[in-house]
Amino acid sequence: MANIQPARTKYRKTHKGRIRGLAKRGDRLAFGDFAIQSLVRGALTSNELEAARVAINRHLKRRGKVWMRVFPHKPVTKKPAETRMGRGKGPVEFYVAVIKPGAILFEVGGVPASAAREAMALADAKLGFRCRFLAREDLEKF
Image (cartoon, rainbow, N blue to C red):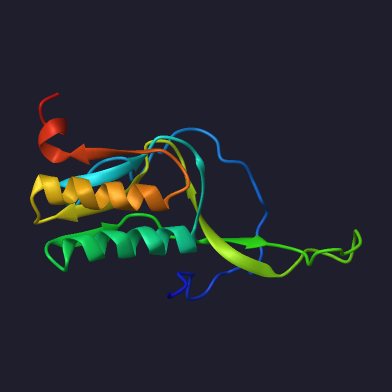
């Protein structure tokens, strides 16, 4: 499985930080007709993201188009097991996408609603937090 990570970064390691507030960007349908939206905050690893993308593409069998709306830009470091305190920050272990409530994770277009709903349910099973299915026609009613 291909590991998703940035091609290059300005700084190799970053502070841990906190995930606060709601998604202000990437919280609306922009490309497709159906989407999966996060309901909680957390860090989505590149492996989880890739597994969800593969699950969607396998179910849709190359029909329609899939947009991945988040990308793992943030490096997470880890020190080796049984290492004493001090001696600096550990090496970069993996990358995560910082997810806030309301963020759209994936969008799908050009497929029937039933196929999109099933594909998004498969993707949701691969993700570490709760999500909901969105459809453009449901949003236009409000």
